[in-house]
Image 1: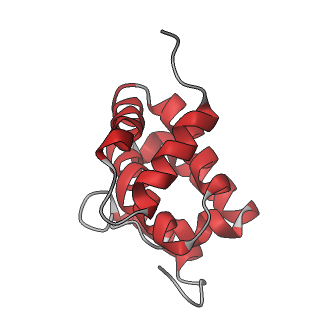
Image 2: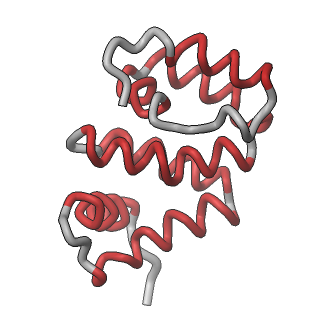
Length: 126
């Protein structure tokens, strides 16, 4: 069996987080994203960007923020801060998503300040 395409992962992950209660048949997408962010942060970054791009609403965006984006940022702050700053300047949806990440107690004050510079400008944060 071949690995799922990014589109299949995005569609399943978004559907999993869009329904109440969540469909256990779609849990594989959550596991796939979680495992990728943990074991291969570079690929995880690409998946997160794709999820944000495909995201249909703020509820799902909150789940991206509190899940894979938060995990990536907390696990690899120095590695990804420059890319995060670049992305946040060019993509308002990414900037909004970043407002839902809780990182203050997990990363250095310097990196917190670099992120806050952008997130504090969002008028209606998540």
